[in-house]
Length: 216
Length: 227
Image 1 (tube, rainbow over the protein chains, first blue to last red):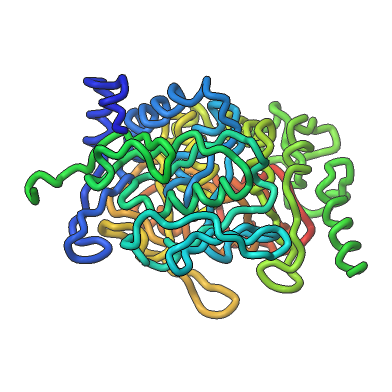
Image 2 (image 1 turned 30 degrees about the vertical axis):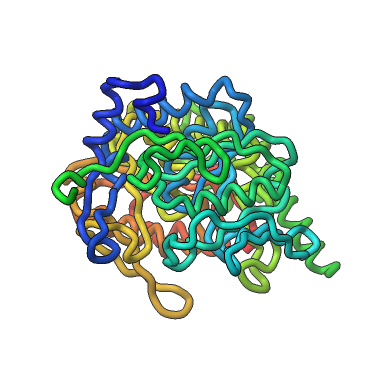
């Protein structure tokens, strides 16, 4: 759900956050209006508002893990984790994490996860067949033992479009017996408006994309 | 296998702050300077007080042998991120050092620099500027090339992210050969930014990365001889 529908209607911070996000047309390919959060990171006040809103929401929810999706989830997740006293767990593209890992991999329409013994376990169907197949988006890795059973987790990314990447992240967490309390993103594309849940998990989004008006 | 275990144990020992090599060289040993001498350029001496938070930070870092290839002892900071106290202490130490020093830019090197940089930037009131691998940043960029063992790579920054005259720190989790940090320095200096300092959690002094940084000071929490 959008923050404005969930207690933050009219909150001036949301407008400042939205205004700080830059739209770059035709990146990475023609027709895509890319939502660039790097300008949000340059605006100290707006960046702080972003973190504060998430921290206020999660600080009393007994969250012990903030998982962030590489790479832009890394820019938001750790600050939230530090403020709420949670661990930060990076969810990375293939080959980046050393040591023993779990992998969520989209295979024939299912998410499969390798357990510690190297057995491949099917843990859920993908919710959408049409998410981006840009390299790395359909495979996420997490360290073995980063998350323990029954831990309460929030998953952070800068933006949610079809929800494919977040679905992979949810799969990773659930395969370890952890509970995903919510997925949280700064920006939510129109596809998710009206959707309160992603793979059965609540979705919390601060703002809609900027700069779509002229194309609607 | 036993040999690997031996190397692993050795590396763990060298991260233990109780062990100090005689400081005959001009490179700063891994102990933090005490508050009193923080602003001076003198070498750390035996009288320096180590920040009591350092041992816990050092011990929270996991060493993984033979990653990404045989012979490399990889310094894995993800275990530091799982230790809420050690992670908080890490950020606090950097924030204490840079707050109120006129730093308006914290530049972080992809991707692990993105984990440490933003919390520091938020706490000291600075912008966070990601320095990224090619083709990741959507807008107009400037690039700087640097050498790898085989071939070259590039880092990029958005045009307009920083302005001439700004003071910056550059953050990464680790300095090894110094190639990436040196490129980051060149990138920022090209657009008129002064680098106050480079800051890393870990240094591998054996690889002499510090020498590549020229005049730019380097601040480190932990050193490791595992390389």
